[in-house]
Image (cartoon, rainbow over all chains, first blue to last red):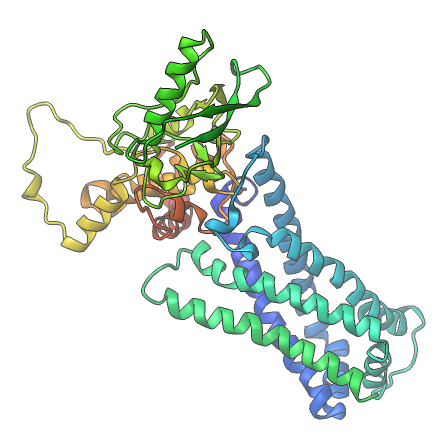
Length: 218
Length: 255
């Protein structure tokens, strides 16, 4: 399989999985925003996503695959890239020719991965436990209180906000970089970069706003 | 100008190298960086010491032989400049200059500041050419129409001198700027289109086999390139590679 061996195929795969996750983020933020606007909508959307067969057994596995692929491939690429220069420079002025974000995708990526662990522990595992292990009865009203409960903790709210900053740094380079990887570098590139950078700031800020809002109303 | 040079010394490919410090005096701003090293070497020879080995040839900025990582930047602090064209006026009296060889697994150090860049040659040999029969049937260059924009773009890509500064600058030691320039100079011209599919697949395969890293689009290479080769070339190579990977299995070729 070319995807496992060729550098460009890996790059393209990284870009495609990245774009998919970028789109997922927007969807996630829009759903979260309903918790600010109308808790009832948030409850019914959460119920739909947790119980609809199409979402549960088709979209969720695709999402998981997207995440795992992007993470594993990112680590594989990082290892290969480290091996490409075994003896490091004594003096290296990276900031003279590239941004911190572009050089530290693995750092911001691992921070997001750690956050993802906490995030699954907070929301995914309790949900799986509730539905499949304890097999509790359906309760359409339980999602919003669970959310409020999690964001009552200032430490957790702080960690979430910090993770969104790392997400912002990751997206700042990653989103526009995906277009270059797919071969899109032309007269539209400036506009694309502008849009991707707006997105890279706006979406994480949306998440930060929601987290802080939920903390402050309690 | 009085300077302190911190230079990487390494006896041969297998020995362990180290930095050595050399003070040097009487350097003029009008001298090139390589002339400054020549003066250092004269002093070393007069003192019965081994001179510092470094690559150089034309000293006109067109052969791609000179290299050197100077104070953490390939070809030194100036933009669009090779080491041989770098003037000592870019430094100040009393400066300490760190001089290292280009570092990459695919560019092993042979001696001191000299690295083996034959991996670039092998990438070229894998497909960086057009197959033409030149035995008495040479066609007039203007017989095939090429539009001005494509001709200029192709020429810009062909300006790559293969010095390896892109690899040296890249945090991943990726050779994608070099390889993409060598692919682009042909892919924009009608003569190059015939072998385009094989060319991009073979050259990228060779590039990977040599142990260069992956491009992560930091853009460091295009900033440090002494010939101004841009990331547009890498995007073009990505497009061509993707198209060729999809096209190859459908073709009639046996290879």
